[in-house]
Image (cartoon, rainbow, N blue to C red; front, side):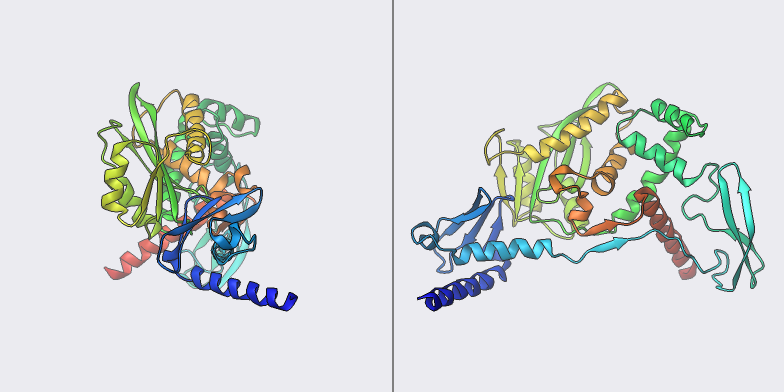
Length: 382
């Protein structure tokens, strides 16, 4: 009898594996709910996680109380997302080429001392230049730790002036305007870099809008977020709410992610329906308008709350293209760990891990290195 049951279980597992290999068979609604198309072609079954266990609407699970092929398929589909190959972005520390000629014929030639600390000097035996390695922070009067500390303080919720006061306790004397210029410079640098990295987001995305003040006038921030990893995909500031065309936002998200969602979760705003039909033509649009139960948009509202808290500290935004929004998107995705992701950042949940004790420095170094490489490539092509 035991052998027979084992064979049945193996058969169900094999059938579930066959279903999981066909991406069109399984639709992910959220973390707890999946729909699996019937292999006979007649309808679909809802697979739901209740108290940590999967249950299915099919007769096999509902009446025979056995683990059906649909549950096996859902478990395998979820496992494939967990086992995504991790991409690491590491600090650039050990450089071996001259920054002027690219030669590796270098020697250490003393130390350079200034008010920010001690930096190793190098001498190139081929082009006879002296130089230091300070990638991303060249010609900056203050050291990388001071600059990245300012960014961490600011995007953690401090105002520019409070950030200035906190830096003073660390022995760094700068004005609040200097802090803003640091933020503006490095947010643009990192934004251009991370937009070339494609995260492994899920097939369910959420969209929502919230009001923000720009120079005292009411505007609306439209944003897209991945449901499973909470990765903030794209954003744009609009003049109005009901009449705003979200097609540009959806097209941008589709381009950055290299895919379109299979499920789009929004509130009842009509502009989402029109944009989804045209840009996300293959997506199932779910219009959640409740605040409780499984039919809600609470994850998106949680992110909106983060942005509102940050905006209050600033007493509104100064311009629609402020670096605050792009910077906070970077902070949300790559720097800030989330309790809902078991202490991971959204980028780590997407398979992108930023190495190093200071993730700001790692991102700035890699972004600067890529920018330099792109510039050299353009000069060579000319």
